Image 1: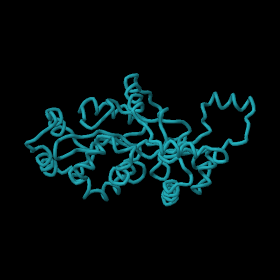
Image 2 (image 1 turned 90 degrees about the vertical axis):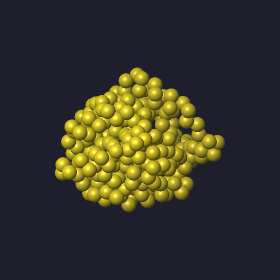
Image 3 (image 1 turned 180 degrees about the horizontal axis):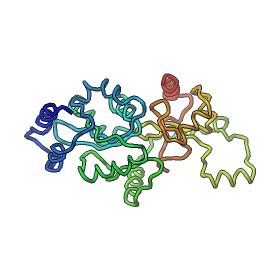
Image 4 (image 1 turned 135 degrees about the vertical axis):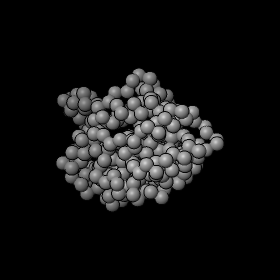
Length: 291
C-alpha cells in the first residue's frame, strides 16, 4: 500500500472527536500492520472490491465504521460473494439478517461511511483459527460470537453453543408463517405422502440423521429453503447431481451465492421459504438460474 495513502486513511478514520470504542489497540494495529488491501469507501469502491476478489478468494476482512470507530471482523471462503450480500440492501433487510449488529449498522450509517480492510488471504482450512485470533485481539464491537467458525471442520466451544441456542429460543414464527409451513407439508405436498419405508430404510434414515434432505443456505449462513433430495434441487435449477455433490463436499459457494448442505448448520434453523407456491419460491429459483 502507498505510504501516503495509508497515513491519509489513518487520519481520516481516527481523527474523530466522538469515539465510542477504546482505540488504543486498534490505533497500534493500524500503525504497525500492513493490510493486504484497504478500500476507504465501501460504497464507492464496491466494483473494484468485487473485481479484485473474483474466483472464490478466501480470507479475513474488517468492516470499519468511520463515524464511530466501531467495526466487524469476518471471514469468508468467497469474499466477493460475501461483499455482494453486504452491499445488497434488500438482502440486509430480510428478517433473518436484520438483527445482526453489522447489518443494523450498515443500514443506519450507509455503506459510504464504512471502510473495508482485507487483513489476510488464507486457505479455507485456516479461516476459523485466524478469524478467532483477530476477534480476540481486536475485540470488535459488531461481532456477536467471540470466535470465528465455519460450518464444517470446526466445533463450537460449549459457551458458543449455548449462545446460539439461546438466540434460537427467542425466535418465534408468526401464526401466518406457521400456517404456511404446515400447508407446505400436507398430503400430496409432502414428498413421503402415501409412502412407507422398510425397516432397513428407517434404520438407515435414523443413523444418517435425515441426510437425504438438502438444505440451501445463503453466503451469510441463513437457511433459505429445504429440498427433499439433491435430485429435486438439481431439476428445478437446471443443474445436475454431480455438480451439486461437488459443491456440497467441498463446502464451496454454489454459483457464488449458496451453500448446498446435507445437514442443518444449526439444529434450530428454519427455512425462509417454506411454500413452493409462493412468490419468494419463484424468485429464489429465478435467482439461482440467473447466476
